[in-house]
Each structure stands twice: as structure tokens, then as C-alpha cells.
Image (cartoon, rainbow, N blue to C red; front, side, top):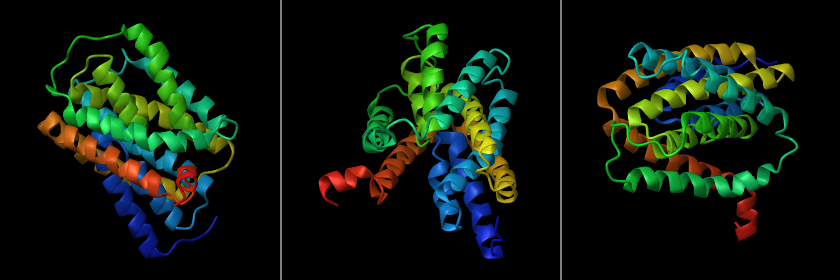
Length: 261
């Protein structure tokens, strides 16, 4: 445990608020908060654990906002949240066993593909369309798999949920966003539990940032419900591209060594 300068704490508070705002609309809040925590001096594991704690507040805030307006039925989705939670716990505990480098190589390209899908697909709006797989099959396959990924690695999990809801479940963009935040909350909670059990959380900073995340997510969800796909779609595309660039620019990404950078 260590003390942080007042300026650093203020920077983390601002980062958490902005992350909550963006994450409630398009996901990718960790793109802001994890680097900020690392710059503050936390170890990588502690940064990931603390990020899971503070992101709980943001995803909870967004979920409450969307549910209050009728965009998601919390009781009806409880089985899906349980599966996302279980997948994230398993992913977090197995993070040191599975080949993380493979994910880091291919993830940027997957994120760019998701951005292109949302940018170029016609009729991408808030109207629900025909589902391609049954809700039962969706819940038993997509939900735990993305939850597992969120616990294992994390970046882009919200984008994967969004893609699945729109392309497979037939949800409109706003409805997909609302359900994504619910499942993100469940997977964040699963990852948080795993990191808490190994003592990788800086509680004071995590709780302070959590309050800021909550406020930012409240504002973001309110704007998303007012603007719908007109706001969500471009922000989702930009977030996916920014996250892909961030991952590609990471000096520890094995892809850089493969291509000689």
C-alpha cells in the first residue's frame, strides 16, 4: 500500500468519470482507467484488480439507468448474469494458464472487424430484428464465453457482447447496449471476486474511482437513451478502433516483435 499525490488522485478521478461515460455507451472504459492506474504506480495485477472494482460502479450505474427506463428486465436476465459471472471467475483464475499472447496478437484485428461491421452495416438502428439463434442457445454459449474472456483478458468484452446481441440475438442498438452493460456488470463482478481473493486490489483508490465511474456512467446512459443509435454507433466504432490502436502500440504486444517493431 502506498500514498498518492493529490494531483494523481484527481487525475484518476477524472479518468474514472470519463471512462464511466464512454463505457456506459460503447464499452472500452478500461482503455482509459487501466493506463491511468499504471501511470499512478500500481503494478499490472493491482491495476487490473482495482480496475475491476471501480468498473463495477460504472456498469451498475448504467444498468440501473437502462433498467429504470424499461430497456432491460433484470429478473428475466438473471440466468444470463449468473453465466457471465461464472465465466469471468473461471477466466480470471485461469489467466496465468491459457495462452494470453495469442489473444493479444489477434484481438486488435477482431476489434477493427467489429468497428467495420457497425460502421458499414446498413439499417443499424434501434429496431429489433429477427434473431439468428434462440435465447437459450445464446445464453449457454455466447454469454459465458465472453464472460470468460472478460475475466481472462478484458479489453473489448463490451464490444463482443454488443456484436453478439445485434448480429445473433437481433437486438436494436440501444437494447443491445442496455443488455451489454448488465452482462458487463456480472463479468466485472466475477473478475473482481477472483482478484479480491488473491489480494490484488487497491481499495481506497478503487472505491474513489468507483464513485466517479458511477456518476459518469449515469450521464452517459442518459445521453445514450436520448440519442440512441445516432450516438452509440459512432462512439462504438471509435472506441473499438482506439482500443485496437492502444493494443497494437503496447510495447509488450508480441505482434510488434513478430513484425520487427
